[in-house]
Image (cartoon, rainbow, N blue to C red; front, top):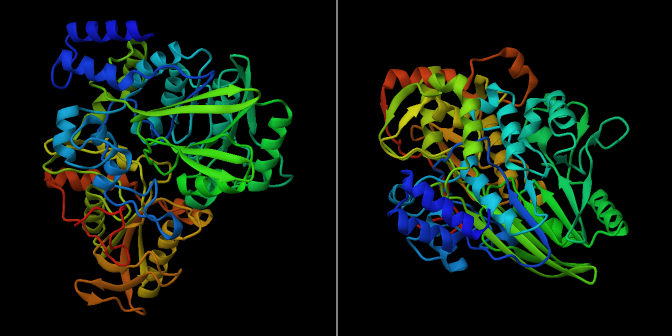
Length: 574
C-alpha cells in the first residue's frame, strides 16, 4: 500500500461511513501528515511490542508516575506529562500528545478516538512495507496474553493474527505462561518456516543447550542484517517457575557478546537486538556490549519517540522502546554503507483507529476468532461512572476497584494486587463488561488467596517489590510496577537502600504492629502450592462483586506518601 493507495483507502473508508475525528477531510489530512514517513536508506525494520492480545482498538492511559532513580532519574523513559512534551517538542493538546501522555485523558480520548487494533495496525504495516522493500516486522513479545480470547484459545487467536499481520521475527515473555509445551507447539508448527522465534538467553537446565534459535540473518537490499532475540530475563521469578521448569533465562550478557561477534563474523553489516528486557536494562546493556547498532525494546511499555544513543567500547547503540497495546509502530531505517551503518531515521507512529481504515482481511479474521465468545465477552457486569485505568508506578483506578472488590468479597483487612502494566482503560460511561474485566485479569494463574500475614511479613513484601522497581542497578529490576495495596497506607522513599524504603505503615490510621497478624487478600500467586490450593479465579470474584454493585465509579486511589522525589519529571505535580 503506497502513499497514493493509502489516500484512496482513506477516501473510500470515509465515503463508506467510517467515522473520523473532526470530519473525514480533516482526519485524512491528519493521517497523511502523521503517517507520511519517507523511505530512508536500505535496511528497514518495523517494530511493535507488548500488545497484550488486544485485537480490537482500545483506550490506554499512559502513566502519570514513572519514576527513575539514581543515574536514570529524569531521563527517558522516566518522563511524564508536560515534562515529556517539552523533552520531545510535542504540542500540548495534539493527537500525538494524547498518544504519549495521560494529559486531559478523558477529553482527548473522546476527541481522538481509540488506538491500536490489529486491523488498523495491519493497514499501517502494509503502507510502511510498500515503501520499504524487504522490510521486516519484529514482534517484541507479550503478544499471546492479556485478553479473554487469548486465554481461552491458549494464544491461538494471537498466533493467527500475527501470521496475518506478517510478523517475521519474535521474542517472548508472557508467552511462557502458556507453558513450555504450548510454546514449543506453536514455534514448531504454526511458526515453522514463517516466523523466527528467537531467544539467545533461554537454555536448558541440564546441559545449557539453546531452546530457541539465538538469531537470524536476513539479506535486505544486498545488506546482511542480523536480528538477535532477548526474552524477558526474569520470567521464572516474575511469573510461576512451574510453567518453564526445565529452562533457564537471565540477561546472559557474555553469551550475547559472543552471539554478536558470531553474526558479525558471518558478515552481518547491521545487528539489532529484539529485546524484552525493559528500557533501563537495555540502556545499561547497551553500554556494556559492543557491536549492536540498535536495541528494539519492550516490557516496560514505554512509548519513547526518539532513540537514546548509548556509547560503548564498539561505538554507539540506539536504544528504543515501542509502548504497548498495539498503540505504536516503530519504524527504523538504516543507511548501510561500506559494511556498516552510516546513518539512521526513526519514527514511533501512534496507531489511531480513526485515522487508519481497517484492513478488511484482518478485520474478518478478528470477527471469526471472537465469534464463539461474543455473548460471554459482552455481558455487562456494572455501569462505570469514572475513568478506570491501571498504568502507573503505585496504583490505578481499575486496580483500586479490584482491591476494593477483593477486600469486600474476602472480608479482608488488606489486599494486594500485582503491579501489572497491561490492562486497558475505560472512559466514564463505558460499561464494565466481562471482556473489560478480563483485560485486567486474563492470566493462567488467576487464583485468589487469603493469607494471615504478620506486620513484619507485610513490610518484607513491600520492600521486596520496591527493590524490584527502584533498585539503582537496572539488572536487579525484576518485576512490573509497585504492588497495589488496599486498606493499608504507607510511606515510600525510592532513593533509600533495600529494606529501608518502606516506613509508617498504617491500617485505619493505626500503626501496623510487626508482631500482629492481619487478614490479607490477593491474587496471581507465583508459588505452586497456591495453584494446588486452587482459590477461585479473580475474574469470578470480581464479576460477583460487580454484579452486586450494579454501578461503580473510580474510587479514591490508595496511594503511598512518596518521599525523595520532589521535582522528579517522572511524577506529575499533585
